[in-house]
Length: 537
Image 1 (cartoon, one colour):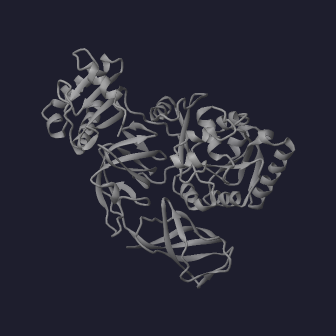
Image 2 (tube, rainbow, N blue to C red):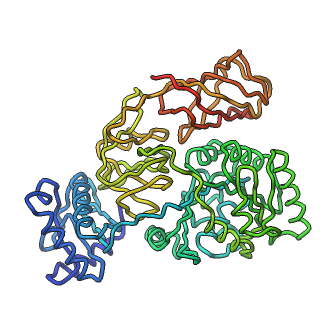
């Protein structure tokens, strides 16, 4: 809910005029405003307002015809936005932004809001939109590098550009990321479309709107205590590529090796960026390059030096076996033009494996006047505003029927989201407290089976002794992070072994399917696996 009432006060002061672009509505309801031909007349009215404002109209909802603040219940405001979205679509426009305020600063007494309606259909992003997951040791410059990429601005040497990502205030204060953060930039032809004011949500929406190709970053956590969060980012976000950073002043660390192992275990094509090359001698950069190349060869990968072979060769050769390596500096901006060219030309790798809609939930939050919002990466299919979906499984294994109120992608309101998009979906029919990370959104006619246990082929990457019956690691599968019980076939698995095991969730069921890959971890023990069969709830 917005605190600054400037937009509301300006609209009320200008008022509703016959030839103006401002419209006052106390509320809009499906039963009244979409019935008996009213849709056509109201859509025509909206079109007139948009044309009068040179492509932009302002709808003030929760006020009387003369501009008096009435306020309406949050559920009525949500329905009003649903109806306004339908009217806008009918008029060849879309809602770009909504701000709300409580009556007398009290949302319980009612809401009043300002919706900005723009000419043109909501964005339908290109099918080549790629999603990149970052990884690497703490203080090696992941977030700073991404911040400079998406803004085109040089860092001040103190990590100033890392604050341009979606991070929490305490993370900015401490200079450490404690959760996944997100960033986006794009390309209009050959030109990069950068964030100009990264702290404004509307600027991120502008990048999405102006770009014919988007690059989204899922920035993970480098600090060892939050490895679980890093795994969640690399496993559950439907990534196309991995970006592993290694600081030239520090070189590869234990965390570097661990993150690389996760990227490769998930068969994710990866590029290594040597950061902070401005801070050390050329001899030191070459030394770290050799260390990285040895590290890659040790795990059966072929390094490709971008400064020697060029960006085109890196784009063509990057794969599960070939890893490009390039030098970068967020301070001097060295190598960022190569990364721009690299991301502009990389093909999308995460192709459709199914046609029906599916999205594993990564985050949940509640928006005043909108309600519960589920955020995540669309795994497959597409979803539209108004679609009927199922969400679950709930702790008892059931699924709840819900409806899509609206969809946002990087703060840009869209009518549809396709596979690979990172979106927030506002849901009608469920409270935010009832949904959680690891649940999944499915088509309304789906008949899903909640799963409490499954069979898997697992590989033990590291373990101090041997894995026996009753071993209890945490499994990371899609956005699920849950304690499980292992029952290895034959009773045990040794480090380096590959074998079959039954895996059982300890506390509640999830939606699991054959072929899904996962990572498991407990202390220093780590491994990967593939689901081979499921057992129903």
